[in-house]
Image (cartoon, rainbow, N blue to C red; front, side, top):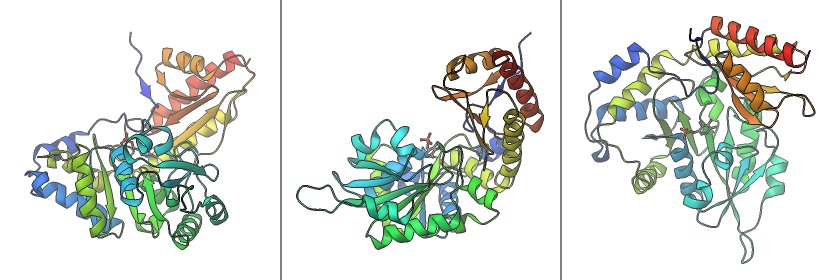
Length: 347
Ligand SMILES: *Cc1c(COP(=O)(O)O)cnc(C)c1O
């Protein structure tokens, strides 16, 4: 008998729902490189509108959105401050160096960056110094465990950056998780960031894509950069339709993922040997004792043999992410099995 699999590795593992597939199948399309794909134009307007910006652009991935933003805000050799643990520092295959040609400097702690930390990290643009040009914030912050950066903190960092002459890009791959957790509109979360990217392929459950928004001028240049990077797509309305469907149907329900994550965390928190904080959103970080009998890889292997898939996030750290394709029941079952494993390992 094969065990049912409960895949908690990431919120990217979701499959398009029947309703989403129907929307994709009936999408009106055209050649988007010519600006003639009505469904893609609609998605871009929708996201720009939601975030209070002039224009938007559909891109194949959040990585490409971030790399285009870096190229908009900095030139080769410039320095860019990023919230510690940033996706563009950890998970974009060195693209910031290899493609955008910028030097990333991590600042702050666990996604939070204070005005003083920004001012303290500035470097002048003189012959022998790179010169700081931009700041990248991330909300929610993945490596900090889906942490929500509060509206006031976010705003203060952006104001300080602007005062120092920096541009600000907000990596909002999980921006709607932050908005739902805070109970505010996405527009409030993004404050005065110059550009913002949001992923449709994470908690929103679309198969592909991100949208980058900013001023009309930013977006004119962004389209050039996207084409240069090979991200110009043709009848891409079939994918944009999935994004529109996700915005219509999968935003408010993120609250269910957050509830499932809290349920998982509280079920595991009382387990010997596991250290689990209370998640802000849909990501649960599970820490094992560094001097303990099992490392994260071996724990994940045991979980897998019971049908539970987790991500290894460090030698003694695991990540579990809730999403559209796991129910509260699934999460309850996963919690029980993970508790059993912990009991047997840490007895
Ligand atoms: C997933 C993610 C991205 C983009 O990832 P892609 O897989 O390239 O779409 C960017 N930033 C954060 C914080 C993410 O979690």
